[in-house]
Image (cartoon, rainbow, N blue to C red; front, side, top):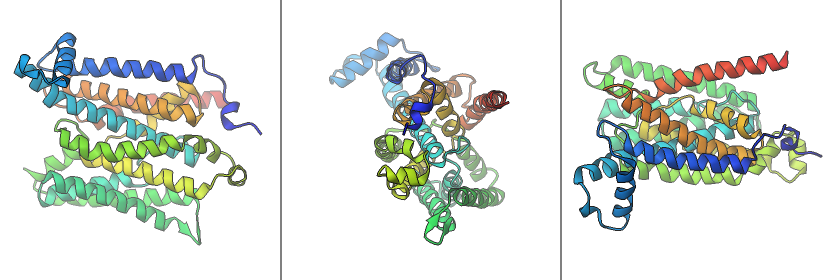
Amino acid sequence: MRSPAALQPKPKLSGRAVLLLLLGALGVIFVFSLCIGRYAVSPAEVVRILFYSATGRSHLLDPTQVSVVLSVRLPRILLGIVIGMGLSAAGAAYQGIFGNPLVSPHVLGVASGAGFGASLGILFSGSVMLIQGMSLAFGLLAVITVMLLSRIGNKTQLFVLVLSGVIVTALFDALVSLIKYTADPQDKLPAIVIWLMGSLASASYRDLMTGAVTILVCLGVLLALRWKMNLLSLDEEEAQALGVNVAQVRGIVIVASTLITASAVSVCGIIGWIGLVIPHMGRIMVGNDHRILLPVSTVLGGIYLVLIDNLARTATTGEIPLSILTAIIGAPFFAYMLRKKGAESV
């Protein structure tokens, strides 16, 4: 029997070549992103700052440039890379196990649940720890609720799981609207709205440590299971015949993807479209084989979010929320994909 990957047309470049090119692009964009902003720093100075700081000689450098590069831009860019990687991998994993290209990390209500938790935290105190803790807790609560709702007998049907996600998303969206309605319009309401639209403006090394550990661990789990995700696209009986415990693999992938999404929302708010659009870009480059699609989507997601954040912080004098830009770019791209697929199917 041929694997699903064998049924796909071969791309012009091998998957490994694409991955290496993307990793090279990520390195270039990383340095470029450290240079740009209201206080411009040359690429040579950025490399010098990174090298001297790593060797303990940062006292020989301009302290203003060191502060801008290391304290302001570096944690923000690293956090953007980690979150972009996580959301893209989660989206590719969800689409793989559900066998549906329209599924994204928001499908199980985790983003809405985490957004509600963050809104509640802002309403109660505004403490960053409380906001992030409640965001993570309610994100997990949302997915647990979905799993319980979709349980029929001893089995979980995929379409019931997705419908349960729609229900839980609608419930938490309504609760967020209720919080916004009751929040102080001069203080709390603007903070809630800005948080829900997603931003890396206040990123710090503490945020990086808070979010990156969970995201990177779960990302490692998804990458380790990428071959088994290929088998999940087969009939359940066929996958079991090949030695895959379908329910166990599917459960692990859902939990890992959910933790990634909840952790991302807990540190920088809701950033939509990445988990939906980036896996499609990855498929255009390397096909549907998750063994290479998942790593390519992961790196592509890191590049994409850093570029979006660069645009958000340099296009105007103020910060543009990330979800606005990801929607402006993602929606036309997805519409193009739908039209293209529709034309191919005629």
